[in-house]
Length: 78
Image (cartoon, rainbow, N blue to C red):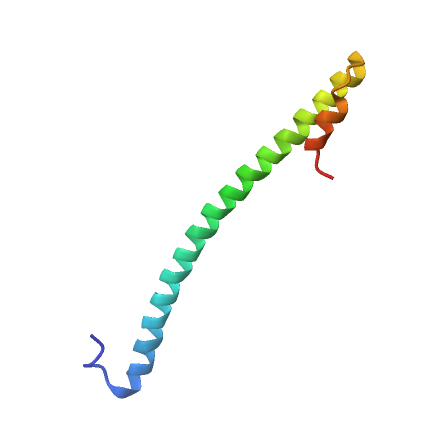
């Protein structure tokens, strides 16, 4: 494709080719990063949901005087 170009311009052609290749790779990496970001976000929301549920259960157990507050605490992070 770039054979008919003068030798002085072949460097620019190669740079252009590598730039296009790099942009494609960056696009590919970006799409994977976005997918992984969504996976991490969903996992964090699930974990935060468990923390919230355990705190609600602990609060109910404390208010009602029930004995399951300690069992619900095992899901709490930290």
